[in-house]
Amino acid sequence: MTDEAAIACELTAEAAEVPAPAWRKWVRPAAVGASVLVGLLLVLVADVLARRGAPSPEALFWIGLTTMFAPAVAALMSRSMSRREALSIVVVVAFGLYCVKLLHAPTAFTAYDELLHYRTLDDLTQTGRLFTHNPLLPVSPYYPGLEIVTSMLMNATGLSAFAAARVVIGVARLLMTLSLFLFFERLAPSPQAAALGALLYAGEPTYLFFDSQFAYESLAVPLAVFCLFLLDRALSEEGRDRHLLELLALGAGLAVVVTHHVTWFVLTSALLVWTALALALRLRRKEPIPGHGWVAPLLAVAGAAWMLMVARVTIGYLGPHIVSSFREILSLIAREGGGRKLFQTTSGNMAPLLERLVGIGSQGIIVSIIPFALYGLWKGRKRDALLLFLVLGTLSYPAVTLLRLTWHGGEIARRAAAFLFVPLAIALAFGVERIRAMAARLRPEIVLVPALAVVFAGGVIAGTAPPERLPRPYEAGSWQASVADQGAAAAEWARTVLGPGNRIAADSVNTVLLGSYGRQRVVTSDDDVSTCELFLETPFGDHHRQILGRGDVRYMLVDRRIAGAIPAAGYFYQKWERDVIYYGSTVPTATLEQLDGVTGASRVFDSGDIQLYDVGGPAK
Image (cartoon, rainbow, N blue to C red):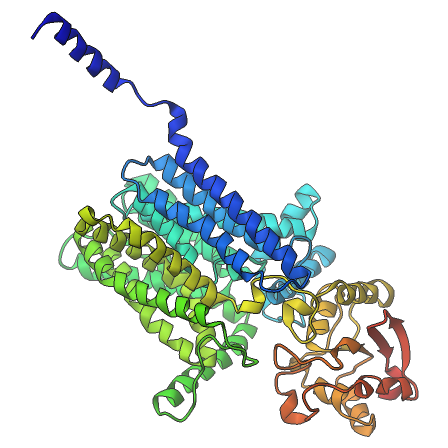
């Protein structure tokens, strides 16, 4: 070799050793961030058009979501990505998807569950006491973890209830994302696979909207996943460090106990199964037990004690739902009931054909990947209790999905997905890795990226009906579209002028507004009062007076926008109203005007569409 050639070789070697510029490590996260911003802009435009009643803004909404999700999946398919890049990408997408909910309702609570929990928060901030009665959701005050954290932030910063709630849920979403990534990182073969698993969790049906709202599950599920991560991390530590992590996990679990009943039950059941598997394996070989075997039983005892000693109302709240679900399943098996039609709302509206195809396709893709996922898990991990735990959780998802064939079971399946998607998401990431390894020469990413985008879209479709994904102009008898400024203003007026705690009867939407923003002691179905008869039966007579007396009703709110409207939810006052009173396709105007001719009834508020009557005279 000549001297010139030797020098050239040395220069080439030195050039190869020069590290890549630091800015290159942020190219892919920056590109994903840009795609998230573009996607959010498209969603914003779709929201604005939907509020103005423009035709068919749904296409922009779906293009925006796809623009946020698909580029991130494609980026995580890279083999040369650092841990920091992978984590940055999944955090950026998680925050962007949370912003979809913020854009949907940027100034006030509009979702049904949010208004229920706002009442508990408002009671806590106004009275400074826990466990005050919430007529809208009696179980809520007995699981006040979310409201306690939010009120503390309000007191510390001076933020409004709405702003503080959005910050708390945003931090909970960050905790969820980080916990998923760190938990999956201990299982997955690479940081990219861990990030992909955390990203695929966004395909869980309640992720985009339901678990982004101000409700107890939105905080409890992240705390539960954080607990799982801490217990798994503790298994790799010894001595003082392990005990400290276990105590932190216990603290997270106890926070779940006082935040959400269902999440506590699922978390405790999962930990008991994991502990039992570890104990069974310990008989054959040395196997570390999560939490030294005492965390899961202690959480079970703590949650049961809380329910029996503090929150006994929970038993009566959850019991009927569980019993009804099992009855529907048995009837379906025995072919005695028609079951529930998929992709159909309670009012009978059917989802568009394309949405039905995507929804079914997403489940087909999940089921198709599961065999590769299980094989990847089995090949990629040692045979331990956590592996068996993940396999059981993954296999449970298709079985629980069958509950969607029943009405009550469908709601249970939708809620259960928030928990079952944790093992399913990491399993899918393993499955994707296995498929890529088996078909490396065929560039399977070309198929995998759109397939995983379909899984994400299918989750959104399964979790929210078409009318709920975009804000809309006011529409009577439709939950979020019926929550408008005029109803909220009437509730605020009642709170300011009449004072809180009055017995008021109203239609279902205004009942929630009066009970939350108005802090009134509204009349609900729990009061054994047939409000549908009170408003819809004509003419006003002795039967009405009996209802007023039985319910101790002082005021009646009449929303005249109901007249002539067809309820999108299927009812205006109570779900069974058409079984009690047949009023045709819609409520006649004369029915809503009958209080004007009742002796002793006086109109105390009138906004044009909404009137509030003092019926203390007729009730006597």
